[in-house]
Length: 155
Image (cartoon, rainbow, N blue to C red; front, side):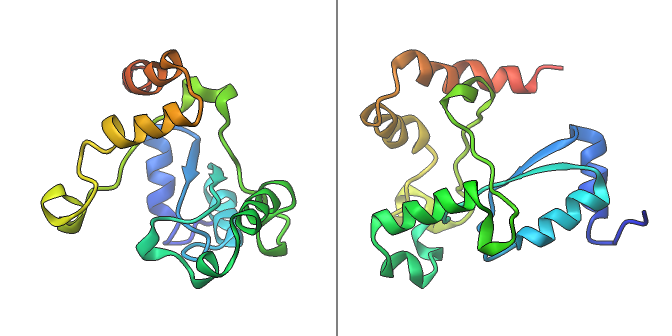
């Protein structure tokens, strides 16, 4: 099958990093059918995320729905598929903790502490506190922050 020009960068990256990718971009930016087409054209296994990005980028529906309605939307995306496509979002649960890498988006000045943002230390400060409140044990947090990064970079 001929690859479209849009799928070529994904295909070349696949050759360098492996056969699977997790796509966490909100579905309003990339459609499930679009990801499915990229996966088919490149042979890449794509695990699509679900939910919403950061508050400045929320769709209006996030503000109009209750927390339970938003949770129902996420469950539906995982169990039934996104927007009636039958293409389901993937999820990573605590059973896959050893495969999870954390990252934080700091790419503009407003993201820095000096400009009112969460800063580079967010994962190690506020987010770790949230993990504790959510019930993660210290050993699980150490797996995420200490064990997983070098394991992911090992040859």
